[in-house]
Image 1 (cartoon, rainbow, N blue to C red):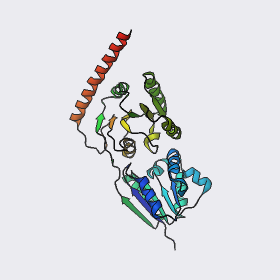
Image 2: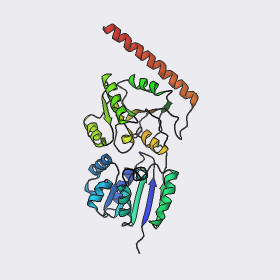
Image 3: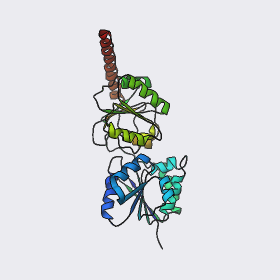
Length: 306
């Protein structure tokens, strides 16, 4: 009698899940592999990278084709719980249909909270065995060099507006799409090069980054918390409080993916990171003085030019 097993593999963001899949490809040369990704842009990127050796599909694509492979991998598995129970119920339909007709299902994620672990316990009705390989869960591989808790959103926006144009790419997370567009207009009027991205536009942004890889700012909603291959980031700004550890880790982990130094500016203390209120006070004070002197310098130049 065939057994149906589930293997959950957790590892920090940017810790080599892609390398793990490629190693699996080399080990199982004669086996077909299917990777199901809930993210369209990530699926396209991976399919281009791996070619025909691995099939990469979104859940919706698989429902239309229902291909069968020996090894089935579900990437960004935590999103099945967050999205599959709300606006994309077909994600669970695809998960169960594929896994119950396969001897081994592999689920990959960097964030596997206790709440999700409790939900997985109900899977015992569907799988003969469930294994969990934990190489790091709800942790960052590359910690930010500095984490600044901003005293206010107004202060944070002033810091963004006074940014230098030669300090690399900076990512701004906004809560609402209207705020993304407003911030883009504001920064563009100040002479910055900006790319914006809201829901459904991740693929379009990926194409923009191929042509113009180094804007001053990328401004986005949570759509860029997963998947899209961004350029090296020097700073990440959160313009709203994010009281959710899983998504906070995914969003902060957009920085440092190539080992570069990066800073995070937020309206809340960091989750699970060592952090000093006293040191933060002096960082805020220093940046406030720097911003004041920058504004005075700009006003002086404007006055002289007139």
